[in-house]
Length: 209
Image 1 (cartoon, rainbow, N blue to C red):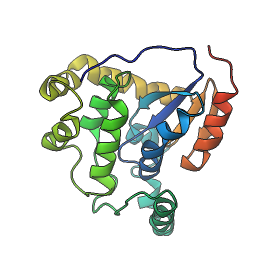
Image 2: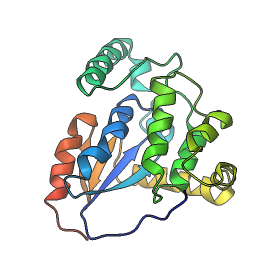
Image 3: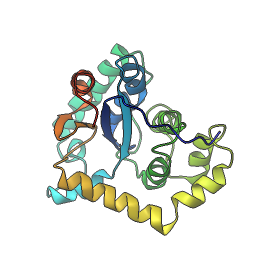
Image 4: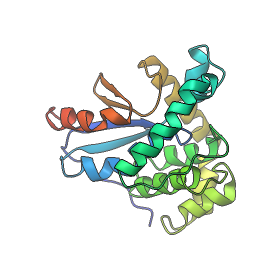
């Protein structure tokens, strides 16, 4: 069901994420279950890592450019997924192009279905090991969450929404983001899934704007 989320007076944690990001997978799967009991509202902020990396002089993920780091990261992902009781399979393609589901996530960022949609896309990438940019898979991730998946897909691919994603990625650059996941409470930045609990605690103690 397509329902607008309602504003409230809870403190807000901005959650900047990318579907191609393996550590974002860990955060997407856990953030709501941790933020809600803390009385913190999650503001979902999809953005594209590719332009961020290019701005930093990298043509690919640092986990690809540095083989030693890559070997470490995939073993670390196995450990972290086990710790959090999450399924995990190293994707056969990394990083996967995520442009279409990212556009859908931006369109639905303030909707009640955003968390469930993001979890489904992440499971497609890091458990099912399937192409997350394929329109059939994105439609499958939307099915049962919205009244008309095709209408959402059409809206996501509209010129206005495409520009919004470019603008949001530019905002990420201007605010100093260099990777995902990143959590912001105002201008206070926390980078990495291993800082998510700290970010939620910080947000819970802050005064809502």
